[in-house]
Image (cartoon, rainbow, N blue to C red; front, top):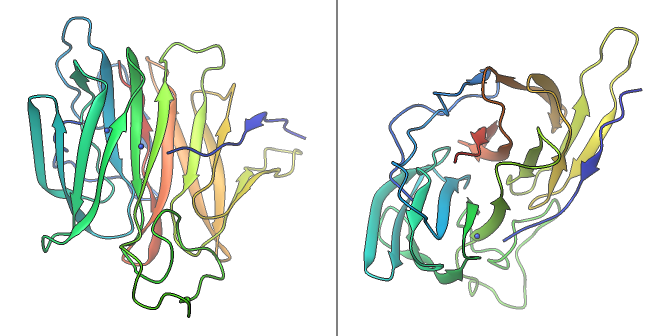
Length: 261
């Protein structure tokens, strides 16, 4: 049997404009090289306090995002799902975020205080539904509550995952289930006489971190009885990676976002 150590934990909530490159589909491998991280990185600045990459893994086509950090203001009027911003260097550890739907309705407004001198993934999830608590993804058996009908704000969450680039357990890959109402079963791929091994069973809003992984590896993700092949291919520069699953037009999809300096 393949033994794959796994660390399982949750998190909570970061910026530079997403590019227009298309996000990969579940059937398309992403090759990670020293010069290609899938999206353009920000130009390094001297001794930044905080670097933030915002990842849109919501289950709606797009959001509008505004950020304020001290005197720096950034606006992303159209931030599509499956995209992420460049790794912006900020001189402050406190950032205010305003998230709106594409019709201008306020989804969430929150101030986040980051650890100084750190790099962060800020993962956005949710489906903007109003059938239950906004701070957690709808579960497998979620149904409208009779106690507070029509009183819930839009379903939306911030998740914060710090990273250090140089770690004692490379390569590590965090798989996050951002799909409302769906369970994700993650398995290893059979290899010769070695059968498939279950690696994690993730309910909405949960994640698993697989450590000491190869730079090139395949996993199988089973969702609603269908199997999706998750491929990671790295050449040259080996990096750690965040892999959130979400719903695109109601169908499971995922992206691979590698840690950048």
